[in-house]
Image 1 (cartoon, rainbow, N blue to C red):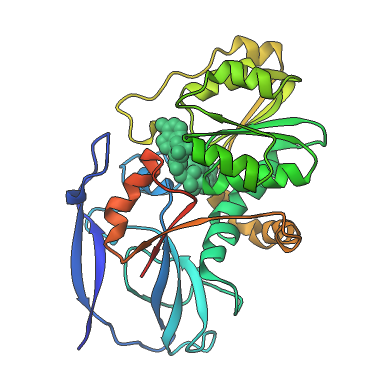
Image 2: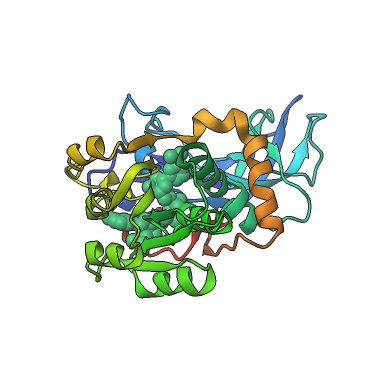
Length: 332
Ligand SMILES: NC(=O)c1ccc[n+]([C@@H]2O[C@H](COP(=O)([O-])OP(=O)(O)OC[C@H]3O[C@@H](n4cnc5c(N)ncnc54)[C@H](OP(=O)(O)O)[C@@H]3O)[C@@H](O)[C@H]2O)c1
């Protein structure tokens, strides 16, 4: 009987970088496929900041934590290699919550078929979580209007880069915040952002005032941290804050302090947090909204691809250090 590799979560990480010893690499026997089941060979796995939250035992989160001893949770894409399920044929490509595992035995529930011919990196970078999150956040909560100004933190990341391009296509002035000069140049020169701020080296407040002289109408929050206070300080009346992520706090010992609420009253600012599992029932609608922008060449992406299942262990930390240049993907 042949074997395959999977990676289990065996301990809860303390604040800070995620150590390799919270994971255990295991060998398993490739299972036999029974009636109604399929065997999927995973080819591409997505690494997402949310996974850092899923390792913590917070019972109040939007999704239960990964249980200790279970395969680490993740989404991914693979190919059906055996099928005893009439809904799937050998050779079909499918995506869903696959986990850190080379093979997945499934009854097909929760797996979506991937259109033949679509590049796997593009699927995970655009049509999976990043593009859907960007579409829901911007259009569902941002209420963007042509001529307005949007400020986006984590702008060179997989979600932020799509938010900015969709907003640009809608006629907004788009300012991105990112953690390196290279990322800032990519936003302006390749993606067409109107301006970019390096939060590690620029005076954030002065730069927002310079790049957004009319003030900020929408703040798309992916990171939290010091950027948030400057964003709120520079917002216009009736501005919207779309709270998508707070990565600067995910591995922090103490969460950063929130902004003063007085300007929120004075400027009548709306603040909306959201989590995509609530919106999965609207998946087809979101894909339908996003697709025309992609077809018109208005959404570019870059994938940062690591090789081999075990590269996920260190790879996860790249999301915390900004080491990823684009959507972080593990190719198996
Ligand atoms: N609400 C939802 O349903 C939902 C769904 C998907 C994603 N999200 C959230 O959206 C955010 C972006 O996710 P993504 O998949 O697009 O990840 P990503 O932006 O591709 O990667 C994470 C990036 O965050 C930045 N970062 C890390 N630590 C930071 C810090 N202390 N301060 C500022 N920036 C920091 C780094 O870029 P720099 O080099 O620029 O620092 C890093 O590359 C995350 O917070 C994630 O949790 C939410």
